[in-house]
Image 1 (spheres, rainbow, N blue to C red):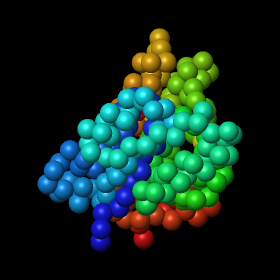
Image 2 (cartoon, protein in one colour; image 1 turned 30 degrees about the horizontal axis):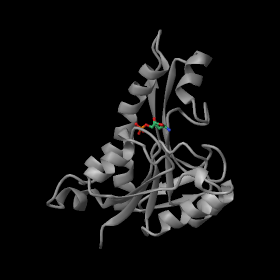
Image 3 (spheres, rainbow, N blue to C red; image 1 turned 45 degrees about the vertical axis):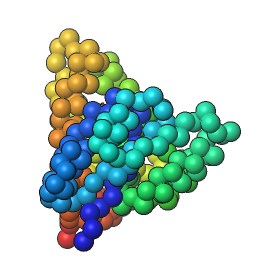
Image 4 (cartoon, helix red, strand yellow; image 1 turned 180 degrees about the vertical axis):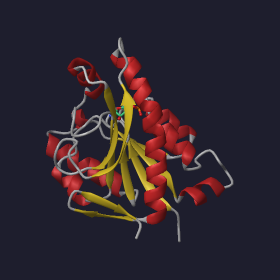
Length: 211
Ligand code: GRF
């Protein structure tokens, strides 16, 4: 069976993208790592043309594309443009790895059940763009990371995996975010590989891997 095709969307530094590129063999010219992983990152898209994440993609030889919101008259037009740009790469799986935009219905429906998002909290606690900051402000002692399929809500789709991360006294947002990312990179790579190799179905709120 040909290797699965993954398209990653990222807006920022791209450390999750880099972890996924490494795990999926983007830097192994023999192709052996990609074969064992079950698929490859074929393209990386962004809403921010200057995002450092794109540098990782280029180094890995993946195709890149940028669809900035400001280039379109409204959100719906942007959503359709992003959908078409992603569809051009024929993805089996779309991974939002620090993609800081909400995906509209036209996008979510086009790739229904095939869009993953990694979020830096134990959802449903602390959805939104400032999860680490919100966890510190709330005084929780434990936060974490969630990998979930994207639905039309905000960080609300069916959960694939969750892993805990402690909040230490005196943590700043940056310190906590870095602690979360260490766990997040592992969780993302392990799950994406497993999903690609074993397949999955989504039944209501439940993700069933393999079978
Ligand atoms: C990740 O923690 C992700 O969960 C959040 O933004 C961060 C992106 O980090 N949405 P990076 O760009 O992968 O380094």
